[in-house]
Image (cartoon, rainbow, N blue to C red; front, side, top):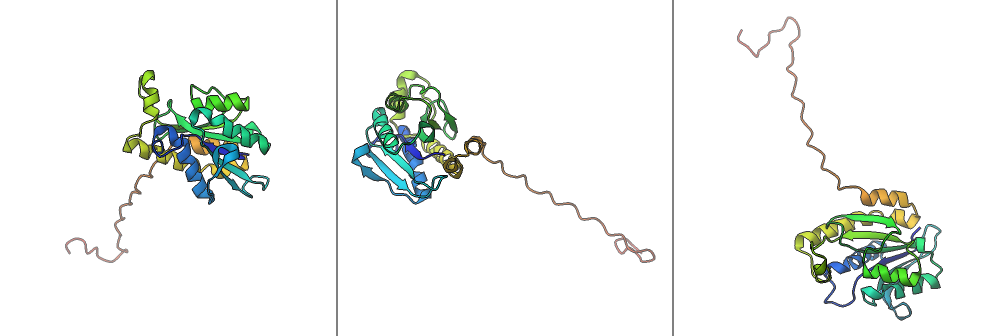
Length: 221
């Protein structure tokens, strides 16, 4: 089961609507679903919410937004995880993903950090890559040198809407994540958008046949 949900981003109003803060957007949406309120916790250098009774074992779960800037995210994550004895496999880190298009979301356990500075620092301080990641697609500028500026800019209205839909769909997997049913969570998050059902065709009305011995008034007599 997931006991610690982490959304990655950068603190401050100047970064609030930028692509790099997609993880923050997801976590804020989850807090809304769970009725949780994120509050500053100096000891972890983060905004944190504790939600009692939501774990699969009836215990608490934590929601976190590190306030250390992206490249020092590991300080907050490792600090809380170690204090509450949360195993790496019980941590879900939600972050922006250049290799996915806006509107896509993928869930995986472990794997490469793929140059993401937040994941790099979590790996360095936590000491393992064996934590879950939810990757929210933001697209790629096409040129590697443009990536730093790209992630710190606002997405277009169309892309922001697509990211919002991916957040909404992946949030539907929250109950499975809390229960530790990761196969179900994977299936829910990786499912494509539902296609609208085709309109139902009306069957043509059958012509009635008059009983024997009675005239059919549809023709001349």
